[in-house]
Length: 349
Image 1 (cartoon, rainbow, N blue to C red):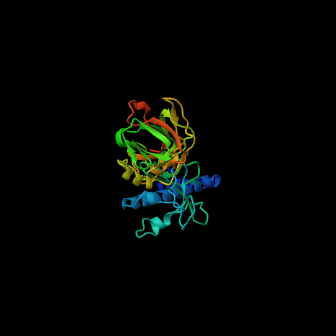
Image 2 (cartoon, rainbow, N blue to C red):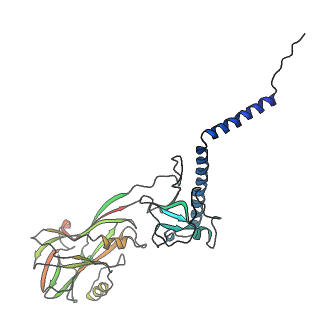
Image 3 (tube, one colour):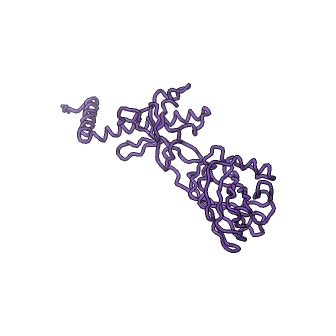
């Protein structure tokens, strides 16, 4: 006689396994529900940064310029290494905030349905998301969720922002008309081996020095800049001069008194005073005060490109009857002694 054995059917086994799984999930959730909720909120944040980044990328593909993404006060959005700009979904005039709703949603062509809001964002314009410029040269944008949880870094793209690069250049003025001088408004010279700073018998001496091929990225930060000269003779003491630049890059130096006077009338408004210019014997090097402000005005100009030229003017009002210091010019035989523009700068690649 055969014995009969009781056993679980396949359906009973599957039901049991399913119940165990449900109970296990419920137990885990009951023991540590915050982790599950944090992961869920982070997932929402990933969707948010992707949506904003995708919308801006499409906006750029349609021919829009990233330089027009401005904060409420009209300044550019932050560089990622320096900080971030708050993304809002309401009009703002505040520094450090940008209304992307007007760009991506309320524009002629909507790029996303609405600006996402971070799960922890409170009421108000701050969406909880941030934007910054990812490198000055590439001009890519990075979207981040700073309130992410569980130490998860949520950014699109996921790359690390580039590190700050420090560099220095020293550009020597060229010969010929790259350095020109004008005495009293009429006596034009471009071939002397020396230049004079100061005045001559109540006549101002004005100089134009053209420094070519300045390999500095647009938007770099000028940390220090000086005009370096080498003394040949001293004709008086208490020499005071002003330094300015011509605002248009790559402007040719003047070739006669007429063009000299024309360029001088169009100088930039930024002035650096060089009072009591130090003197000394033959071969004494002298350096101007920091002229970073003059150079920065060019580098910040949207039309600036690496390799552009800057034309520097040196002169005064002729108030001193006779007070001058002669220095070597671009036509001087020793290249190491010619007028040199030394610039220290920093930038993000």
